[in-house]
Image: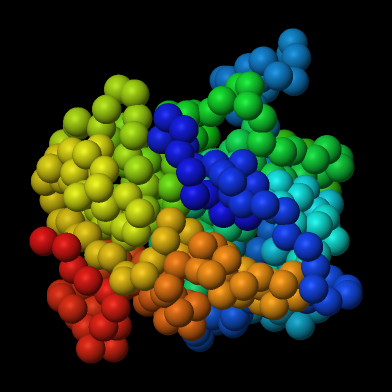
Length: 387
């Protein structure tokens, strides 16, 4: 379920990286749970199916264009009548588990705190926007903990499945899984994000970007909700590299955050970036990966590099919390579990995931200074600042 190997700068699923299939130690599926965010607002969410008609789709055939599934997360109100959204659909979860060497029925997908279609809460004008790009052979729900945290603090967050390098499902029931051909590269992810930013502009202008104009009306208050002057982006692994590429090419994004992106791209990332950028590194440190060090040298604005002791490539995502829940039921040894999540305690990882991305975007999209970014904190002794 996580990316732990690279091929041309792309994280591969562990099922393809040498982890043997895991047999269950107890009967019945594990009922996974996600933690509740700390923000003051309830969270709403809605799925949008968008089509980029400027990009033909060679896989789908003549007359077809690049299709993407996205989710929009936001602070909500009057949530009582709106059901909670699942982390991913059961069909997608089965495919995802199988790809990682687990039994297809090993787990039940957790519920999020996102209320489907709930009205948008807007008390202080339009909402700052953050977009998320996942890693290779991954899915848009991979950092739901971070996404829900941001939304509960008043952000509008847009996540996207990068079709042909993602596990997902379209509204008509078509299941999408990662393909080897076409092999998407970070610039393909970046192109997806630039189109998603166009869709955010549509929402800001009061238009509905959904390809079917959505069977149900858009959530009340979503039209006009995005603040186009305050847009940030973050990504994990290949999505972190895509974040850097978007920052190079698209001035709409004012601040970027990479969760252990390898920064391997063709052409290399050698363009100066004058806007804020933060690296949360684990495996792909500047010392271990020359492309990360090269990218860092071209950051001319505010910049910060932190690393949590004991973190592995996936430690800044949902995996760090979900895999330990599954470990006991499938009979993982402590050593095998460390192979999945490293030695960073899951409860500590959860606090780091909540605190540092929020502090970064609060500073650079809202102008709210947080001492957490000024230097090492006694509250987070495992988080090191890399000069």
